[in-house]
Image 1 (cartoon, helix red, strand yellow):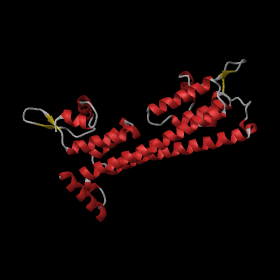
Image 2 (tube, rainbow, N blue to C red):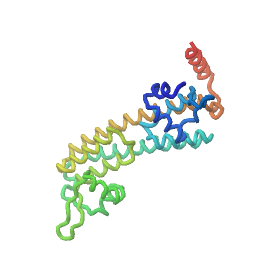
Image 3 (tube, rainbow, N blue to C red):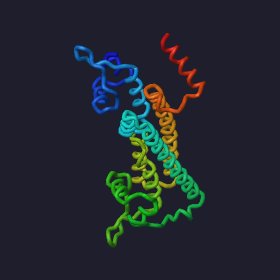
Image 4 (cartoon, rainbow, N blue to C red):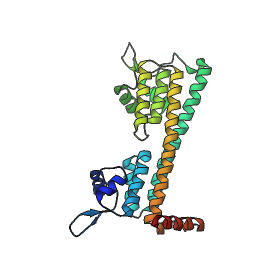
Length: 256
């Protein structure tokens, strides 16, 4: 298939297609006698996998998984992807714990420790994120720390800790329009000295984003499996009879 047609099939530009090839995300194109590039259904399987996986795992991690696959390191590729799925699950658990704490604080404001102020070191230990991350968030306008009038050290209150925990959950998620909006909401909450109710709303939006990301990861993995089944079926365990029959019927339908 001509590069322009193949690129249009997946909603990308021919230059992006060439870039994928140059970076090794897809196999080398077939060259005709006159030197023109041509692409096959194998290339289409790779492109479908990239388009499905990149929004869920990032283009960098997708490229690494495909690199391992092309080096015939099937199990390493699958475990690499699984590790990213587990990381999202751990982020979800942290967010659920934060939401539970916020709800408890709303029911019992006394336990929130409204007057408590922590130093940078104490806050880092409390929310389990590096001090460098907290400094970066403050520099980016996502946090607004008070300053100790005696020594000028940063001081963080309960609302700051809530926002830090939110940012900590979002820290390793795939960059997207959703994460941009969530970070903007955190920045607005920091500048307005938001209460727990606003933090809860942001946390609920973050959970909706994680649910969407979880679905995207499942879709990405399904296309990765299709790619493996198409290009390296010998690497998989024996297909069950029902799957083999389904594959044959799909192939017959595609040939018509």
